[in-house]
Each structure stands twice: as C-alpha cells, then as structure tokens.
Image (cartoon, rainbow, N blue to C red; front, side, top):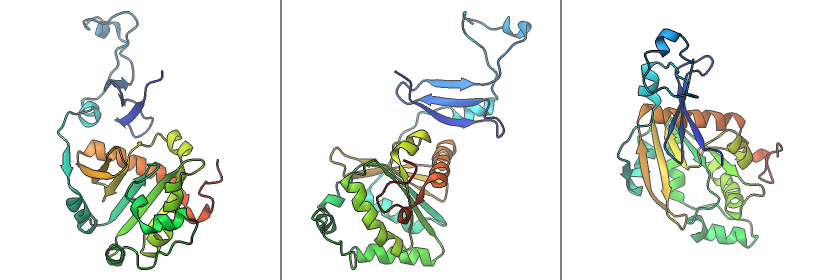
Length: 249
C-alpha cells in the first residue's frame, strides 16, 4: 500500500529541493536533496549501508519543517466564536466533511429534505448581523466547500445555504473531491485567520463539532496557507455550479 505523504516544506523557492515530507500514518520523515558524492566525504560517514544514499540539507530546513512533538492547544466553542471578531483581515475556511450533524437538527434542513424552498430570511439573525458588521469593517470571509460526486445531501444543503452566507458578505467557492485529492489538500476542516492562526475543527463520531485546536507554529501554519492557496486557485464560485459539480468532472 502506498504511503500517505504530506509535503511539509522546502528550503528552496526555485526547484523545491531539498524538501521534507512526513508519513501521516507512521510519522516517519522523508527528506530529499542533493546527494553527498565526494568519496572523501562519504568515507567519513558511519553506518552507511548498501542501498543507502547520503544527502545534504540545510540545518534550517529541519528546524523549520521537521515534525515537532507538541501538546495540542484545545479551546471550547465559546472561545472559538471570539476568533471571528478578533481577527484583523481574513478568515478562510476549508469544509471537507460529507455531513455536519448540527445542520440536520435545523428546520431549514427539514425544509430542504422535504423538497421545499428553504426560507433563509430571519434564520440565525444574530450570526448574520455579526458577519455584516465584520465585513463592514473591511474584513474578508471566504470558504471552499469540497463536494463529492454526486454531492451528499448535507453538501447540497450547504450549497443552498450559501445563498444566505453570500448575502451577509461571505465569498464561497466549491471544489470537487477528486480535485482536492489531486491537490493533496488536508482531509480536515479548518479556519485560517490572518494567515497566522489555524483553528482546526474536531468532530465527534456523530459529526458534531466537539472543540477546536489552535495552531500557531509557523511551519505548520504555512502548510495550511499553502493548502488555502491551492484550493482557492482551482475552486470556482458556487453560483457557477447549479448541480454542485464543477464542469471538470
């Protein structure tokens, strides 16, 4: 079975070499770079076995991008809500799940599954007022929603919900699951605030939001920012896809 490798980062802005990858299942680290070739240098190495290749990497590459053991910083949902007023410039969301348990408890979800036009006027009035207030301050809210082919009921519901979110100032794009896999986007739900703080959403077995992990370590935040840039480049405005599936699939 092929490894599930995540690109952590590179010490080069030109050709991507040398670079660090991490095995998401085993935790092993894979580093590639230019080989050590001078015989007098290789002769100084200890325990270099047949089939092994010594490579040369800058010290800062490992400092910046090698995995680091750390204690997760977990916050509750009340503290999470405060992030949406304390950020300065941008709040960006990747929605990768196939369903959200909290949606299925709402009257709007019941209307949607009965095949009725969903009445969004007046729904979550306080939330809508908060979004409008932040947008009026010049802040941006953007989302990319990943869609299966065919979309799940929960994903189709959120496409309908996008009308409400757009009306309060959010910008919502969609991306197919196949494209997300091709781009190796993380299979996670997260918010990225001001390109410096990641709020990783953690769900229970019933797809209910349980709590949130805050991530501020620069190299890790950079990986999420790179995922954002890739997703936003290939995603399309949700209004272009009445069926919920971009024309590339």
